[in-house]
Image (tube, rainbow, N blue to C red; front, side, top):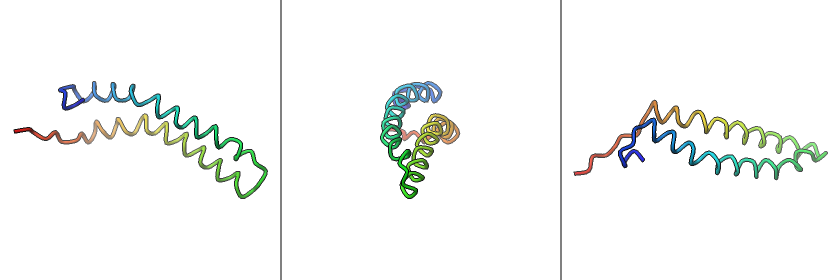
Length: 82
């Protein structure tokens, strides 16, 4: 979008709206698949599933916040076409 001439703020907003739903749906699918494993009484398997669920939740939230902030702080250099 930056190559199309959009400002950095506009590109971040459009990309955030476009990519939000696929990221959330993928995370929810994985979390729903891990819930039965997390509820398993086996003490070797359940903690791993709980940690994975926590990681998926935190990475989903952070990807919505950290990625746009880092993109704005360190924008990629636009190559000038000759």
